[in-house]
Image (cartoon, rainbow, N blue to C red; front, side):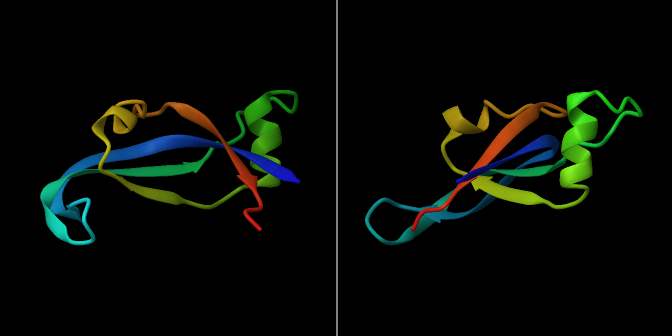
Length: 88
């Protein structure tokens, strides 16, 4: 079973911190700290965001992305579907 949620990117911060070095250790590097929050309703009961808001009115996803190609896919106020599928 898959559960789908819809989130909005609310924050993107560049940070210098320790990142994996590829051989089990750490090195200094850059991460994009990305925060996503559930979308909110806009007063229209038929709007997709209102329906998602009714199912998931609060929450947060925090990502520390070291792959800059992937990080560039996130934009402020961009909306993203997030699918949760059991890994078991």
